[in-house]
Length: 144
Image (tube, rainbow, N blue to C red):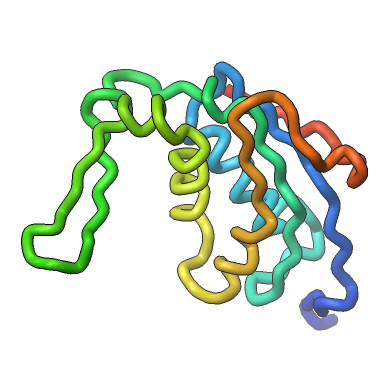
């Protein structure tokens, strides 16, 4: 018996909603990355995008445990000498909480063109409203 390998034509993509209110950032990110990669499905194939669409609501209410708000730092570089910019996560969560959630999830996906295709299926919203009601998304509960 040979190992089953999914083909792109065999895959159906569902929609899931994750409510991030009061949940730790890492728990939300791992749940979303698992859904985006398709590891929750029995047809999971590493080199095929078998994942589903993920909608994350209440990104502004996600929590960081311990002293991560003051100790965790987001770095970016302009490309020029001395162009390193640092932002403490307390400021990042106050200004762009949806970006902080996206960054955590992007780091858990493959770092190649397959990962970029998976990341396009992620939708993050600050509040509790989202414009994807027509897709009839299912609720996905995050433990934590």
